[in-house]
Length: 132
Image 1: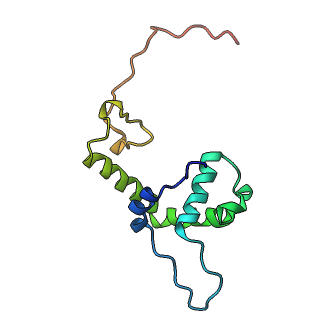
Image 2 (image 1 turned 90 degrees about the vertical axis):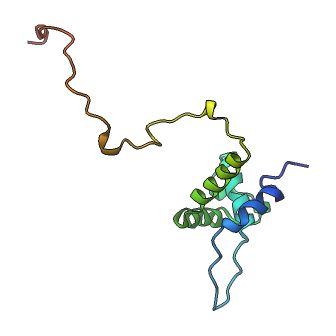
Image 3 (image 1 turned 90 degrees about the horizontal axis):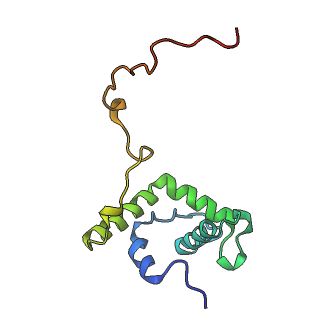
């Protein structure tokens, strides 16, 4: 049997972070459960397939998963998940800080950082232009 994409243990830890599904006062089709949608999203991201090619055996369509991904992003779910799991790792002292890196795409230089000063010239005079 294949290893599950979303284990019961992980789901129990993250389920409380999910926003409640909107009420449907006029009825209609019941929404796909959050766990099913998350499993579909993880399958697409892990396998690299197109949303439209998500197998029906996953329990939801690719479009449903894509919409749920969009809605969860707007609701800030991914930031809450990331922060919660990172806090859990920190409390367990399981973060290897010697392997951590910081790059300019994730750390903003407030007001552009320190002024650099003037760049020194590397030659005294410019050479003759070869095209004229």
